[in-house]
Amino acid sequence: MNKLLLWDIDGTLIVSQGAGVRAMERAVVQRFGRPGDLRGIDWAGRTDTWITGEVLRQCGLPDSPENRHAYLEAYLAELPGELQAAPQGHVLPGILELLEYYHRHPTVAQGLLTGNIRAGAELKLTHYRVWHYFAFGAFADDSPSRNELGPHALRRARERHAVDFAPENTFIIGDTPRDIECGKVIGAQTIAVATGKFTLAELQAHHPTAALADFADTAAFHALIGD
View 1: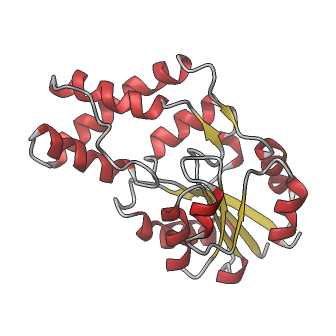
View 2: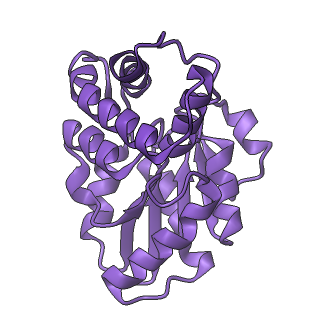
View 3: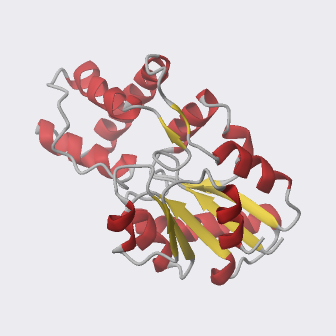
């Protein structure tokens, strides 16, 4: 193996029609009895642990380990129901074909680099039946800063495959400017996709290695990987 794909989740692999946000809002009410309107938070590309700090601040609560744990546990309890209540949620175009192809590819490894906590990532991707494609990854449990997740992903890729993946052969794939920035921090290639909140032009303004409207044209994606 000599190439590594690290995938974002929300807006890149799947859209859950806001299930995660609603679960976080319901968790505020359930755990703290406070209004669950979190629309003022800048969600895109952030980590769940960063968002948790913002939620506690908005609620006027101490940012303590106990409050963080209680809030994220409440979020995980609410998330399955919200995923079930969003039948419009789906795996994005081209993703199943790409995941299956690289899952079988002898020289390409793939993992996750996501702002979700690991348990939340598992709930979401199990719901959409793609969790089994990912044996490792970096998650919000590792750091509230997305820019600090890359080294964790590289370390786990090395532990899993006994390969030091070179920066030019590592691809960070995501739908926000923060995914692009995160990839640049570790010198990786960055592939941006406009299937989330940001337009193609907005993503291109952050100078990723490449940007695509979506991944429906899987041949175009293969060409970027050099496959």
